[in-house]
Length: 191
Image 1 (cartoon, rainbow, N blue to C red):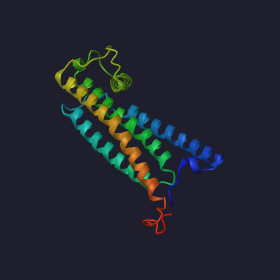
Image 2 (image 1 turned 90 degrees about the vertical axis):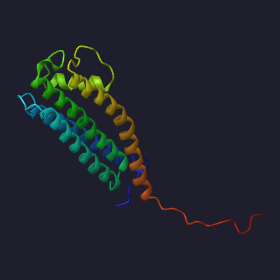
Image 3 (image 1 turned 120 degrees about the vertical axis):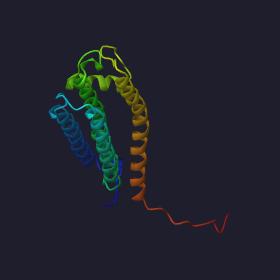
Image 4 (image 1 turned 30 degrees about the vertical axis):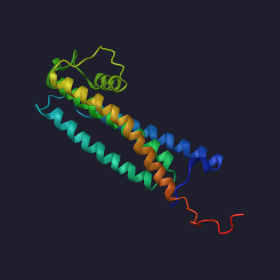
């Protein structure tokens, strides 16, 4: 299949493609957030469970990102596929840290200024990602502070690198479908 640019589609087809992509984005984001809410993160885990969950979540995130990048390279509309990838990976990234924070708080409720449940863990992660830091929830243990600091550093890299990677892979996919003119060399009659 030859990749096509969104702007090259007829108006009606472009609208249908955008509507379908928007629906897939909403469903993917809702599925990730829904899964986060059904996971039993607020049950008393073993001492290392928060770290293990974070590492396993990181591996899942990398696997999903690799899978999604492959899908962009093989998509008919790589630009929309890149947006859909962001709709899956950004919520996955957020719930990865939120889950770790909820697990830490369940292990020791004094790890943060207040015990975290699913919603407050998600809230704290999003506020940290947005670098807003309202101050209503803050880490109190050294391990939680290190984990939040790690999230801030990874947030900066995620925003910068993930978006750049998606744009680059999309361009590569689009350029694969573009025929290149043959190299004609210098003009033999330069009048």
